[in-house]
Length: 75
Image (cartoon, rainbow, N blue to C red):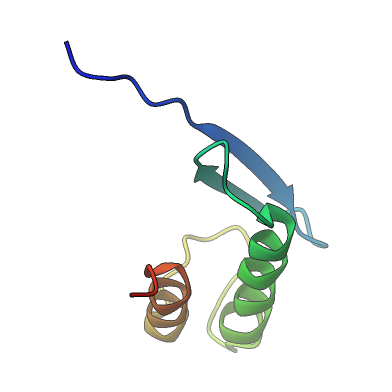
Protein backbone atom coordinates (compact mmCIF):
# COMPACT_ATOMS: atom_id res chain seq x y z
CA UNK A 1 0.00 0.00 0.00
CA UNK A 2 1.33 3.44 -0.90
CA UNK A 3 1.44 6.41 1.38
CA UNK A 4 -1.78 8.37 1.17
CA UNK A 5 -1.53 12.12 0.70
CA UNK A 6 -4.18 14.43 1.98
CA UNK A 7 -5.35 17.32 -0.15
CA UNK A 8 -7.71 20.15 0.54
CA UNK A 9 -9.62 22.36 -1.80
CA UNK A 10 -10.68 25.94 -1.76
CA UNK A 11 -13.49 27.51 -3.68
CA UNK A 12 -13.04 31.17 -4.47
CA UNK A 13 -16.00 33.12 -5.81
CA UNK A 14 -15.26 36.01 -8.12
CA UNK A 15 -17.17 39.28 -8.25
CA UNK A 16 -19.60 37.99 -10.86
CA UNK A 17 -20.23 34.62 -9.22
CA UNK A 18 -17.59 32.65 -11.12
CA UNK A 19 -16.22 29.84 -8.96
CA UNK A 20 -12.63 28.65 -8.99
CA UNK A 21 -11.69 25.34 -7.39
CA UNK A 22 -8.10 25.14 -6.27
CA UNK A 23 -6.73 21.83 -5.02
CA UNK A 24 -3.61 22.11 -2.87
CA UNK A 25 -1.58 20.24 -0.34
CA UNK A 26 -2.39 21.17 3.26
CA UNK A 27 1.00 22.82 3.81
CA UNK A 28 0.69 25.09 0.74
CA UNK A 29 1.68 28.61 1.89
CA UNK A 30 -0.12 31.78 0.81
CA UNK A 31 -3.14 30.14 -0.77
CA UNK A 32 -4.97 33.48 -0.57
CA UNK A 33 -2.27 35.05 -2.79
CA UNK A 34 -2.67 32.22 -5.29
CA UNK A 35 -6.46 32.68 -5.39
CA UNK A 36 -6.07 36.41 -5.92
CA UNK A 37 -3.58 35.90 -8.78
CA UNK A 38 -5.82 33.32 -10.51
CA UNK A 39 -8.71 35.77 -10.33
CA UNK A 40 -6.51 38.59 -11.69
CA UNK A 41 -5.48 36.42 -14.65
CA UNK A 42 -9.13 35.51 -15.23
CA UNK A 43 -10.13 39.18 -15.21
CA UNK A 44 -7.25 40.20 -17.51
CA UNK A 45 -7.48 37.46 -20.13
CA UNK A 46 -11.03 36.16 -20.04
CA UNK A 47 -13.30 38.98 -18.94
CA UNK A 48 -11.58 41.50 -21.23
CA UNK A 49 -12.00 39.14 -24.19
CA UNK A 50 -14.86 40.57 -26.30
CA UNK A 51 -15.78 37.07 -27.54
CA UNK A 52 -16.22 35.51 -24.10
CA UNK A 53 -19.77 35.01 -22.85
CA UNK A 54 -20.42 34.72 -19.11
CA UNK A 55 -21.25 31.19 -17.90
CA UNK A 56 -19.69 29.60 -20.97
CA UNK A 57 -16.61 27.35 -20.72
CA UNK A 58 -13.34 29.27 -20.71
CA UNK A 59 -11.54 28.77 -24.00
CA UNK A 60 -8.77 31.32 -24.02
CA UNK A 61 -5.22 30.27 -24.97
CA UNK A 62 -3.56 33.29 -23.35
CA UNK A 63 -5.34 32.57 -20.04
CA UNK A 64 -4.29 28.91 -20.23
CA UNK A 65 -0.67 29.89 -20.95
CA UNK A 66 -0.47 32.39 -18.10
CA UNK A 67 -2.11 30.02 -15.59
CA UNK A 68 0.26 27.22 -16.60
CA UNK A 69 3.27 29.53 -16.26
CA UNK A 70 2.07 30.76 -12.85
CA UNK A 71 1.47 27.31 -11.35
CA UNK A 72 4.54 25.67 -12.88
CA UNK A 73 6.97 24.80 -10.10
CA UNK A 74 9.96 27.09 -9.91
CA UNK A 75 13.20 25.13 -10.32
